[in-house]
Image (cartoon, rainbow, N blue to C red; front, side):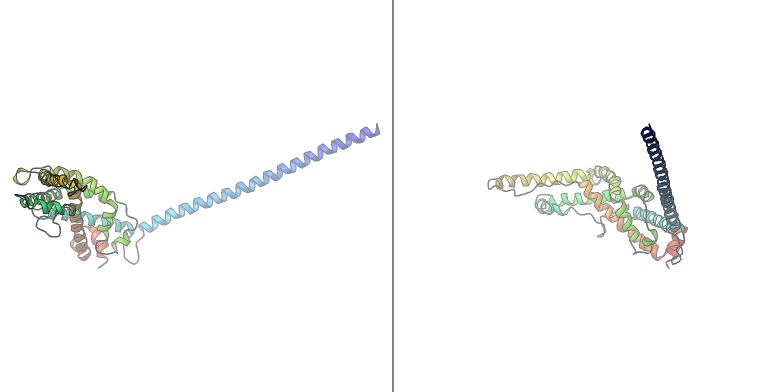
Length: 291
């Protein structure tokens, strides 16, 4: 009986110890969880503060007037867009005149370099040189006709253009803005401009013939002559003449845009040199501060 009471007492003590230990462990786990959650909350709060601070800093940098130049980055961006729009207007007005491309060595559109053999071969045929000149004339006339329509195309590209550091571009070289526009929007401009070039290439121009028709006539003559030579050469397992297969619209688009960007660069240099002569207030403010 005495042993039974002793065993019961030991059993009760054991359960009590386990309960106390479990309670202590639970309290410890609870305290640890509170500590971890508190740390995470502090880190999260710190991270949010850093993000807010970064955004605020960027906004401040964008609108804060640069003490060295006297204008903010936002001012610079607006001035850049205004300058490029001015450049597009001047390019459109001047390049859309007759012979603006055709009689200007800077903008003249010749046949692609890949057609060197074509030109040499066709030039020897009756009316060959005349046919070649017809194609070249129509290419240039097409570029001149499309130049009148470039303003909406460029305005769309310039409006959607995002500029990271306008101050750096404004304070850069004379054609920095033009180069930036070309880098950021060239592919977009090609896709917008090429359909206009394609349509113009199909229009009847000099002598009631379109540029595409003149080109097809020229290449057909060359490829036919080349086909005869190839038949002879094939006996020896060779190809004497490679057929000409060039996307004339793509080629003409790229050449036409080259001239447009040259013109815009000229106007940008003029704006940088004489900013106070322009009606745009933001151009006078930003580019004028550089004088």
